[in-house]
Length: 127
Image 1 (cartoon, rainbow, N blue to C red):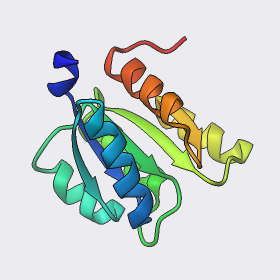
Image 2 (spheres, rainbow, N blue to C red):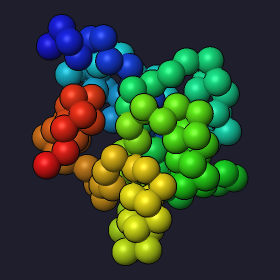
Image 3 (cartoon, rainbow, N blue to C red):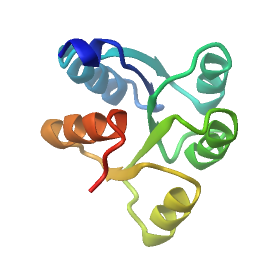
């Protein structure tokens, strides 16, 4: 778990309850977690700090998760981005993966799956 403490994760989602829940799960697992309620707020945070892993909601008011994904991959290509959404359409999946998403997960998230994907992303391992 000590190696996890070195890893910083950013959660970007407009749903307060979801952000809070995800944050608690990841902190309990030993990660350092920050959060943003919008893509614009996340852009400000990312301009000051790099995050090895970002959980990013696909649909948010204002700038979309896909727009932020493109921005992240341009400015910080080493960051892994896991897209999260209630809308798992094939088009959204294809677009996110083509833009450089590490994974595409559907809400609601199961805790074990969430932690597995976080670990895989931070260890550069996707089977």
